[in-house]
Length: 168
Image (tube, rainbow, N blue to C red; front, side, top):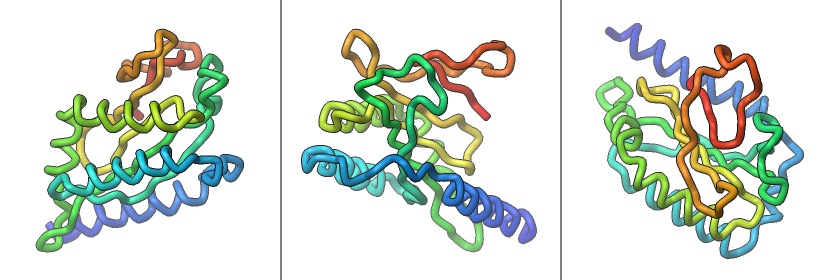
């Protein structure tokens, strides 16, 4: 049992380290307006209020890394990497699972960020802890914010289209 806990913790640590090393360096946070920074701060506060959820990392990447048809005027994806709290030597996953079952809550956070941040076209919430896929919301051509559809990317035989995501 102890080995499983250590293994999960090490997985999270290694994943975080790799993510930090792989972060794109050409996306600049200073381009964010005060309203955008406020929306992101509100998102952090809302996520931190969920029991057993911690924000492990927040970063940005270019939408063009995954999508050739992403909105040119919204080149950024904002990423919240979440984890659970440790209790009695075990990682608690209930908060992450609760978020995975709360798409309306995550959509509300995403809509607020996208409406206040002129360069952000998508918001992603992910974790390596729970057996749930990450959830992405993005600005669609009709001006609405919608949850991206999970598809089996390798089976598609083509790049992802805007509005699609995959579970890795």
